[in-house]
Length: 284
Image 1 (cartoon, rainbow, N blue to C red):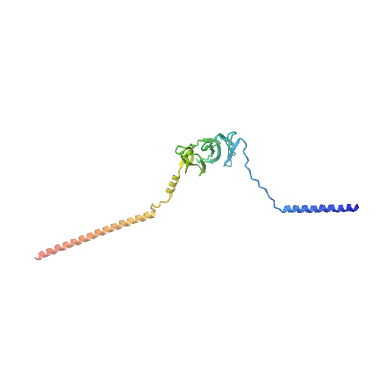
Image 2 (image 1 turned 60 degrees about the vertical axis):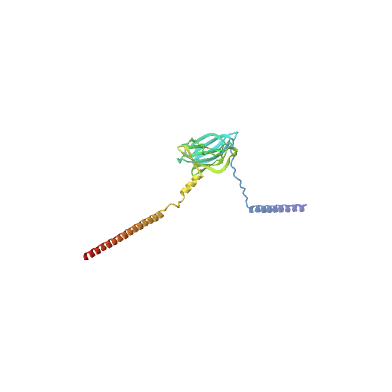
C-alpha cells in the first residue's frame, strides 16, 4: 500500500506539468495568429415618429439649419419644420408650414447675393403627374421671409407631364422636365426637355426659359467667323485697293501724256506744213 501511495504521489505532479506545457503551447499558437477585427457598418439612426425626413444644412460653422417633415397617419399630407441654430448670437428660429406630399430634398442658395441664406424645400406632390414644388424662405437677422415660388406659365406648361428635376448650377436653381405631345393617356414624349432658370430679385423669384436652340445660337455667335476680315486681311485689301488706284492713276496719266504728245506732233506737223507753203508762195 505504501508503494501505491508513492506511485500516485509521483504520477499526479507529472500530469500537472504536462497539462501546463500543453496549455502554454496553445497560448503561444494563439498569439502567433493575426487578430481579426470585425468591422460594423454605421447605420443611420431611424427617425422616431412622427418625424419622416431630416436634413442638416450648414450655412456656416455658427449657423446651422435642421429641416424636418413630420406627421402621423397619411403620408400624403404633413408639415415641415425648419430649425435655425445661430450659436454665435445664441438665437434659435422655428419655421413651420403645411406639406402637400413628401420632402425629397433641401437646398441652400444665395441667388440674390445679399449674404442672406435661402432655404429651398423640394416636395413631391401625390397626384397624377407627381410634379415637384418648392417652399422657399430667406433668412435675415434670424427672421424667415417666405418667397412665393412662381407657377408655370401657359407656354412653359405646354407639354408638361411632371417628372421635374431640380438642381443648383452656378448658384442658381435649375429645373428641367421632358416635353410630351398630346394629353392624357395618349401623350407621348417628344424626346425634348424644357429647362428653366430661376433667380431672386427684390425678394421675388425670376424665371426664364433656357432653350437648347438658344444655347446653340450662343455657341454659334461665340464661334469664330471665318468670313470676317481680320486686320491683316483688311490691310492687304486696303493696300491692294490703293495700289490699284495708284496704278489706274498712272495709266490715266500715261494716256494723257501720250495724247498730249500726239497732239504736239500734229501741231508741229501742221505748223511745218504751213511754213513750207508760205515759203513756196514767197518764192513764186
